[in-house]
Amino acid sequence: MIDTLLAWLSSALLLLGALVGLIGAIGVLRLPDSYTRMHAASKAGALGAALVLAGVAAATSGAFALTTLFAMVVVLATAPLAAHALARAAHRAGVKPLPRAAGRRAGQGTPGRPIHRRPGSGLAGPLAVAASAFRSARSAARRLPLRQVAEHHLADTPARLRPTTLRPASSHMRRIWRLRPSPS
Amino acid sequence: MMYDIAGAAWVLPLTFGLLAASAALILIRLVRGPQAADRIVAIDALTLLVIGTTALIALAAGQAMLLDATVILALVSFLGTTAFVLLLRRNGGAVKAPPSPASRRPTDD
Image (cartoon, rainbow over all chains, first blue to last red; front, side):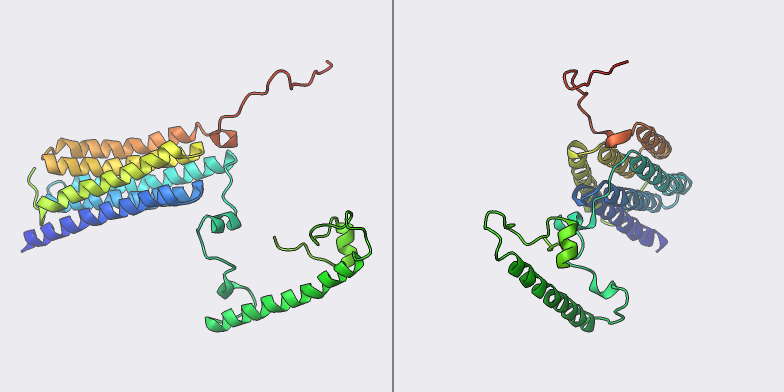
């Protein structure tokens, strides 16, 4: 009874450990940044190795439990230390984490701002979506007349002096027209 | 070294295959990694993978001695990662072209 239970447990642990290791490897390959790759490598890799070692311990029905347990403890204790040292050294060596927008461009993260986390909105779910849509529409409506004002001021300048886009060329012009830089 | 695994005929090859696939993915990152930190991350993940693989080989080959090798590898992998970490320098370890003598400004000293 105990033996069959241990046999099933060991096969389950081995497969689970290999799967977690595979997920960590996919993360190491696919994540966009050194730091996120570290995150995938250290945690998923250590958990996969520990699970495989536990599966080995269960497969031998405890005959080598002490050795495998020691190896598990060593792996689980040193992998976070190594990852921390690596992250600290990378930070001190000037490795830059990817900015948020670039990560979003690389397909990571959610498109757009996380509307349910915006401070001050307190609304949840579809209400927050509606509130966010209303806010963006209002700010666009605020922006539009200012652009028309700028076009009006630019109407009597010769075409070769006219900027191709209505982005203010300097902070001085921005102060006069109260223009925000257009989101590009 | 006796072992007892439910469905050992397919569990052990499947586990070996999964570990080999992860090793291949990590090797791609090791070759491609744009910065030195990425390569060190790949080496770290690879040693963690090899720890599991060695324990599995010990099981499949029936060699209890390989479990001791697993323990030693678990102890040494930390030292290996730390030694690579000490090699990280400024600029992320990217190789920088030395300034050519023509562009160097003459200093009056």
